[in-house]
Length: 81
Length: 403
Image 1 (cartoon, rainbow over the protein chains, first blue to last red):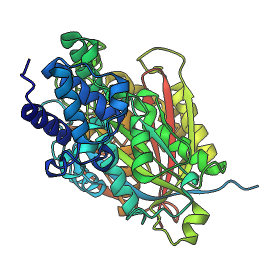
Image 2 (cartoon, chains in turn brown, blue):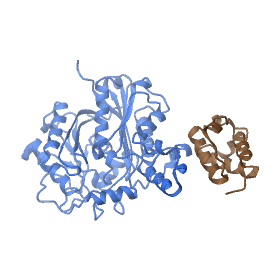
Image 3 (tube, rainbow over the protein chains, first blue to last red):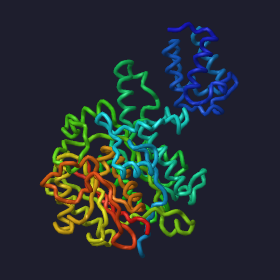
Image 4 (cartoon, rainbow over the protein chains, first blue to last red):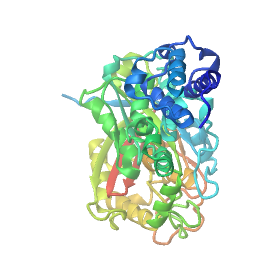
């Protein structure tokens, strides 16, 4: 398991999202999932990665409220603390 | 009411002979083979050259082939640039596959076994479902008419084209994007076909040759754009040919073996000719199923003789596309229809590659080794394309080329 420092979580999430389709420069904290064309299936994959790396389990209800990349980073950092 | 005529306005292919329909015919006519190390892999196909990162990871290899071949077919039909010539809900999509996304299924099964259920990708089902190719083409080109997949193993590609033609004839659609796609060069598929004694131990595809010992597996896709002839003419569409006839029957005989006398394959040939309102003596060329298995090539020969009679059968040139690319399973019938249409247009009869030692039991004109030019018997050239599948499925298309 990796230590969930905010920087590490941000780097990991940005890398994961970029692997799903968008260019890595587009994946900023402010970018919305809608803008990035990241859909519910992508978010399930993101949750699998986050659980593998940080032991943080994200459920469907958690994911539903995420709008931006920053939301996802903050949620994982908060849960991992 | 007279039946609506169905024309082919564009084709596209990804095959072991390269990316594109024209390269398939050109290299086949030259007697080249796309088979290496006992398999017909699409070695020239680099998916990332054609598809985005998102498209790559959200579709199996078989759907990648279909998407790329469909881009070529739609562009050839003059549908390029996202402009559809008909209302989107009047355009259907019928895509054949033998198995679907087998590579993805095997991968995810490995994940399940090694890492547990929670690690299985949420993309698994959309990757491996049998209709994934049809869904991908529907979404890619905004085709909103009837879209689904047909499955009848190695006969599926021809079933798709026949089904698509019927869809237009009955008025359920004005145009249909159809064909087949397959990508099963995987450990499980190899082992399964070897276990069924279907694959060639020598790794050589030589239909109708005395030394034939099984089929060689290939992969790829062939896509055709079919349109109502009247509407196609109104919009000044390029026409490559017409689906004149289609029929299918079933052997109800054995899981994998063809009925040895070719009785019901012959019935399908007869019915396809009847559907086209043609007599056997009008046919310029037969694109055989010609798998290079002991049984198929013998029973197919009998089926042709049964319909044409011994004497006429000997005068009809026959060849097998599988001699050049191997057996593309669910994509085979579609790729072979495309090769046939292009051959009719070019007035050339492509060869059965590798047919060096004729089988004394098989005594028809299988176009051994070298292509031959031809002059159509009538104003427009006419061909039959046979496809037979595990499960006893027999499908025959009657295709007409351009004048």
